[in-house]
Image (cartoon, rainbow, N blue to C red; front, side, top):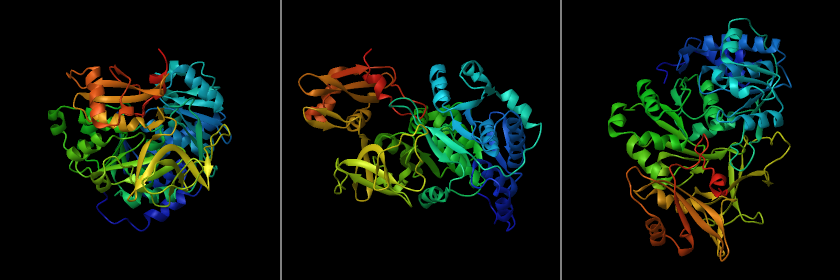
Length: 504
């Protein structure tokens, strides 16, 4: 936190600098550079860079891109990992007025080419190690790190270009990733207010963002950090030990993660956990996929009352926020409705259900998306957007049962995989577990369980089935149990159930 009151001239100076681009990425970086020019903007694998330096380089890159035909109406894909180049490139893209599309760094070649075609991407800016991947991807121009660095020292760009759209791709867990569009100059005050209402975020924080920047969760915290003139600590690849070390060494107040990252950090040895204490850490912000109750308890036990779990999606943005107090009371909760947001639970006919009754989750707020870039949309009801999940409220807390299309109907009984998975994940011999439905001649569907054993644990199929039988109803006992080395998950830790359900 800044240890002095802000000089009265800083904020007006920042507003003047932002004026040509508004609250877009370019506007935020311009404002931060005017407000705190010598503050460190980013620590990454290459060292550190100030806001003044970052803005100057971004302007020069924008000039280079403009000279190569990048401007309003042009789609530019960003295939860049977590480092300063991501921020410089996205700032430059928005400064030219082009549309920015954030590309998943885990894409394989065919998937990348498919997204480039369907999102009408003309230019791809990429890390050097993606050079082979982007060859023949269909873009008219590709720009690697070396070329980007050359642009960064070659010129400036004039101000005043209206920003284009920012397109964030969905996770693609149910099919092709789709572009979810928001205007890059859209008013984000409500979204900021929703976070600040529940989370103690401050101007001048040092934050470690381990979550991927191309994902809505990491990207949102990056923008929020720029608006607060934070120092952001980044690493190209996630490593649990190095992330804990960076959090300790940089005395970070904020750590931004997805749940699987927390799980891997807590799997470090006791010696590693003790070596890197985090007394300054006041906020662990977790989202991107469901977090298990056991992991919540373990995080609170190790780090203290600093965990904030946010529920939402690329499409609906923030829906609910669970504070450390909420999670201590109910570790499986998704939290309370965020400031400025409406959440309703409805039945199949769209009628609101009573407290405690499971139904479909619909969300409304100023930061929800404008629609998919292909013209499709999420189901809407009374101005609210379907989250695609099933859940219920209890005493003001939201509990999410799982995706509505993940529900298994076995013998006429509804089974949500998450309940069985939570039970299994609490078993000391089980490190991870997943449940999917499989066809069954007698019951329509039956449960198939995939289990990752804890290191050194001995566990057989009968013991797994017996554990479920002893704790849950009979129709929730799995028909089959398969032991695997790991479960298929995407970069944000979301379980890829379709891969498990597909016949081998």
